[in-house]
Structures are given as structure tokens and as C-alpha cells.
Image (tube, rainbow, N blue to C red; front, side, top):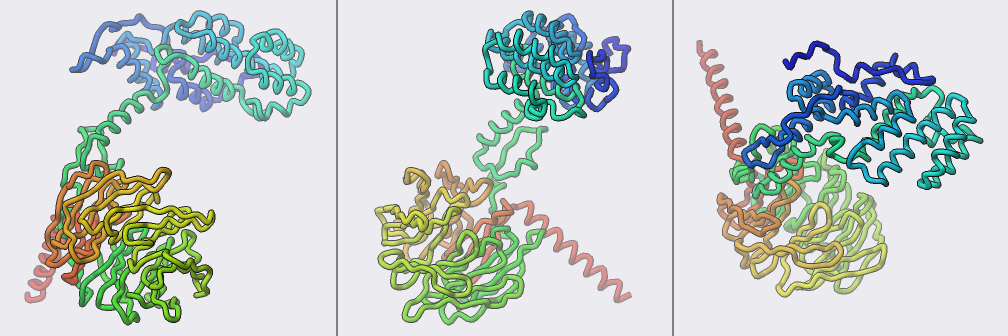
Length: 585
């Protein structure tokens, strides 16, 4: 192929460096370090071909550039022989003979020759030449200093480095290292035991960055171009909901509607009355639900996606409004309707503490960001903070909350609550500062994004508003289509990067929108009563849960998951029937 007889890549034929750097040739691992970082710096010069040729259907890719980038990628991946063969066969050298000569001279420590060759490289501006010259002379100075040639090092400093009149502070550091050689620890040569080859390879990397892309193909250029193409495909994918690990280079990427949860995988029937609220744990391993039947339940999500009942939490004497997971998912709060807040151990299902206040009912609950305490909205419109052991730490009186059970805490500790029918309070405890989000319509519920930068606000007029609450507070998107007339309907963020918005609806359906565009993507029928709440799994992009007045919880997923589950059921039935048949014989 191309008549290449020598099986060694050109970079293997390295000349012995001058001075005390004999170990450079002896240590093949260091020699390979230079090869990998620079991509065959000493490849032999070849006659250039294909400069005017174009490849690709669009007529915009120059063949010579295309081949050079592939060659560069081969060397970067360690395929040095393949890179050399491609240069030979294509007749398109990765670099010019002048650049190869320059890089070889740097590796060999021929400083004066390398400086002379540097002037011959085209397309280098005056400043780049100066900086490159400084780097080369700095390396020369340090190597002379290392082998004890102090007079020669001082001469290089005075007669070559100083006249450049750049990087003055570094020149002072170099001068100080003549008096105190330990300064070399911060100047590139870490110790007397460090091989010169390593420091020269680092020098080559610095020089590489100074050369124009047309002279020296940037490191990992092919990978960068491929990543750009994938970014464009992801950005143009309206229903993108796929992890990067699942994206292939073999075909153009496109997520269809089938990548959004749209099939009922399971129907959970544990509650005996309307299910008002549900929420996945932060790690996605559990799902908690609360109901008008005065109970809450913890469901376990298996690795295969199957959801099963773990604990039934009883003790409330009124309907359970909401639940809230601790930051580590080891504990759960449940809040009764103007009643008490209970704290539960997730592993055992045991009630660890009951939070209550004489003459006042608790209507909402949540956790401190560090998990060391809880907060609750009260029926007297105040907000109270509690230590885990039940001690009341603080209480904000006045119009701090309404009889709406939504509260949240941002990552930096700000408390969010509905303070008036049309307003949401952002309370900064540390700065003792308050901000208010004003809506024109009555607020029925809200949901905080994972990054604490956005707030979904459900309104009585059948709209959901997306608020940016970082920096300038403003509405950035609106979602319409779901039905709300009498009940509290809740929405949530979900999918990859929380790129989607899902909501319940009084018409028994689940609605899903694209978060940025506000486009309604789909509605999911199945429930026979109002859908009160939805929760999207934070660990499974394709799992969504919905709670309904029909007393059930539906687990939504993809069609392929449904087919897989049906296949498993059929296989189990076949095994059962086969075993029964064997038992009869």
C-alpha cells in the first residue's frame, strides 16, 4: 500500500538529544508521549497532492484538509503506522517539511537551529514568533541550569531572553532561579530526576498551540467536528430525550414522539380514595403518594422499572395533602390537611416524629437543603422552621403563605411559598430579603426546577406559566390545553435536562409540552377521573407517574418497554404452563 517498506512510524526514528538527555531515546514511553501529543512531529515530507480537489456532496470540503484531519486523528489515537501509511498513500503530508524540521530540532534540543527554522514558517505573526522564541529560550535556560552550566544559562538570560522584552515577570523568576535553583520547581523542571524528554514534550504542546491551524492541525480536531455535528442534531431534535451514551455515529440522530412516555406500563391500586399527590425520590428508586384516604404510600422502583408497594404510612386523621423527600432520600415528610407533619424512615416505614402546633394546623412541608431541619406553612399564614427533634427554630408571621400546600426550598436555601392568591414569595433567610412574583390570575400550585432557576406556576385560568427566578424575574413561556375548573392540578418538569413540562388535568388526561417552545406534544388518556398530580422520574427519562381521583396511580413509559413487559409475562406464563404440564405427567 503506497510502497511503504519501513514498518516503523516516522516518529520512532528520533535522533539522540544533546546534553544530558540520553534517557530520552532509552525511554520508549516518553518517546511515545511526544508522538501522541504531537501526532508524528517528524513525519517525512511528501509531495502535496489534492490541494484543489473537493469531496462530499455539498462541494465545501477540501480533500487535502479532510485527509490531514483524518491523519491527525490517527496519530492522536495512537495509530502511528496507519497515519504514516495514509500520508504516503495520499501524497498529502500532515505538515510541511519546514514544520517537521522545526519540531525535530526542538525534540533534539538544537535551540539555535530551531529558532532559525521558526522564522521560515509561513503564516506566523510577529507576536507568535516572539512568544515561541521566548518559550524555546526558556527551555534552553532551564536545561543549562539543570546540568550546572550556570554561566551559559546566565548568558542566555541576559543576551537572548531579556532583549525580547516580553514576559518580564517570568524573566525575573528565571533570574531568581540562578541564585536559588529550587525555583525550577515552579518553572517546568520539577526535579533532577525528571527526564528532559517530558519537559520538551510539554514545550512542544505549547508551541503547537501557537501555530495556525493551517500549519498545525489542532489536537482532536476530528472529534471536535463530530461533536459539533452531534450538537446540531441534538439541538434540532424536537423530542430529544435520549442520553448521550445512546447516540450513535452510524446514523443521524432523531428522537420521535415515541421517546416520550406515552404508554401505561402499570396501574397501582393501593389507595382507597382519591390520590392527591405523588413524587419520585431524588434518586428515582422510590415513589411516594398521598391520598384523601388519610394515608401515604412508599413504592419501590425496581431496576427493571417495575413498581411495587413498600410501605403504607398511616396515622394521619385527615387527608394527606403532600409528601416531601429528604435530600438523601432516607426520610419522608407527610402533611395532613390543616393537621400535622409526620417524618418517616423510608427503610422501615416507622414514624420518627410528629410536628404540630397548638391551635394552628400545618398545611405544607419541606426540607432544609442540608436535611438538618424542616419547614412548614401554617393555617395562620405564617411559615415555621423546625429542628428535626421538633424544636421550633424560627417563625415568620404575617402574610407568608395561604392555604395552599406548595412550598419549596432552592439549592441556596431560599424558601418559596404562595403568599397571596396571585403572588409567590421568595424568602431569603440569610440576607433577610424578600421578592415577590406577581400573577394576574389566582395561583393554584407551583413546581421548582431541579436547578432552582425556574418555577412552573399553575393558574386558575387553565394556564401554566414558566418563570425565570434567577436574576431578572420574568415569564419565559406559557402552556395551554389542559383543563382545570374546580380542583388543584399540579405540573412538573421532566425528561433530559428537564426539557419537557407535564401536567394533570380535570379531563382525566396527562398533558406534555415542549418546555422551550411551549408546543403541546401529546395528551395521554387512561385515567377515569381528574389527574391531580404528575411526577417525572429524575433517573429514568422514560418514566412518568400520574395520580388521579380514580384512586389509581399510572406509570407511563415507552411502547418498547410495554412490549418487553408483555413478552416477559408471556414467557412467565409459558414456563408456568410447562411446569404444570410436567407435573401432570
